[in-house]
Amino acid sequence: MQETFGVILLALVDGQPRCLTLREMIDCYIAHQEDVIRRRTIHDLKKTKEHAHLLEGYRIAIDYIDEVIDIIRSSSSIADAKVNLSERFGLSEVQSTAIVQMQLGRLSGLERDKIEEDYSATMQKITELEDILADESRILQIVKEDLINIKNKFGDERRTEIAMITDELDIEDLIEEEDVVLTMTHKGYIKRLPVDTYKSQHRGGRGIAGMQTRDEDYVEYICSTSTHDNILFFTNRGIVYKLKGYQIPEAGRTAKGTAIVNLLPLETEEKVTAMIPIRNFDDFENLLFITKNGIVKKTRLMDYSKIRSVGLRAIGLDDDDTLIRVDLSDGDKDIMLVTHNGMAIRFKERDVRGVGRTARGVRGIKLRSGDYVVGGAVIDEASKCLVVTENGFGKKTEFSEYKLQGRAGMGIRTYKITEKTGYVSSMASVTDENDVLLITSDGIVIRMHADEINTIGRNTQGVRLMRMSDDVRVVSLALADRDDEEEAAAPENEPDTEVPEEDSETEPVSEDSSEEDDE
Image (cartoon, rainbow, N blue to C red; front, side, top):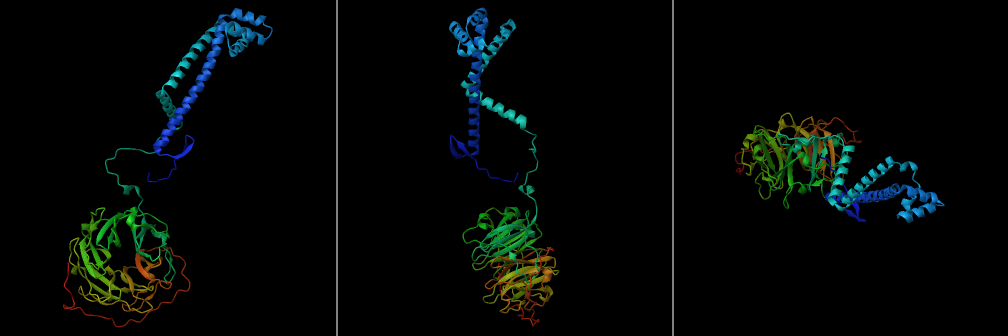
């Protein structure tokens, strides 16, 4: 019952083509059936009157049977007999012809009774047909009876059941749950795809086209989720909106998608900057916010369980700040922040005290001039730190190589920036069970197994993960569950390029280096 189909209700009405509504189509059908019944009744009335006219001639012949026989016997021919009968009894040509052609057997008394009965029934039928033509309601009743006869003749048993239910029916119960990938471009076009759309390739390949984008547009956000999950959308204004996975329209791999402004009531200049899937809202979990200016905020997830259709204030932001990441956390992990210039800081989540839903948060890292945060993660020691640069280089590094520091310090070097690698574009926490999806500024997506990416030192150059054309850069990465169905490896993969680990650039954290925390 969730399927829809289009119907063009085009019909000829009084000789003119018209597009009708469903009610107009029904009205025209009923009017047509009335016309059919009226024409049929007129035809039957004509035939019945003709039959009554013959019976009237037979009745005259039987009443004057002896005289009729004498006229026929004395006539010189059949034609002469017909003329004589017509002149004597005032009969029509049809009646005189029928009398001349009568069989003698019909002159018996038994046949006379049958003629009288037939005549009486015929006159009653004439009266009935004339009454039908004179009464519109009787014509409509016949239309109704004809339709009921059609239903009784061709109808079958109902195949669905309409019943009273005690529980409220949820539209989600009618939608099949499946794993999907959601992608959204920099200019706000979003779509839903089956999770197996992007098959795994070996690193160093060219990738496959993930979306046809407009000029200067590129895929910016991508996540794996389910059609039944809640998707929270956080905007640059610090507002959060909520949709179900199935509410995001499905589209083909290379399709542009649907403009997010058609799904969310975004205001002018408001742009989605982060989206996170939520299966269930749990009072024991927190949402961890990371901003471009290095602000970190921790708030209970349950504070965001009731989101109105017009959105809800999620975080208070400075005028020049932007929300870049939102994570789920249990409140007892470590947090990693990575900057565009290759700096990183690791500190305890307990150092970030929980605040209210609309609060600003506290400083996570002290940034140099021109630097900004490109990524952050809640650290799981079973995972590794994946850092990817704008020119398609990247590496994994053990989180144990990042010493624990106090919040609001400048951090330590996490990537050796060179002209070949470019600046850091993104970071994520990965395991060998993950697949990594890299997205470029021209809309190309490549998927690879995380265990194919080398694990090397903290202050090193890394290896090439993706080949790119000139003026194209990696803008984002996303993680998905591992897919072991692989495509053929791309030819002529570039050899791994690794720079020996050098002394780490470290700026110690002291009481003086921390700035006053702002909430």
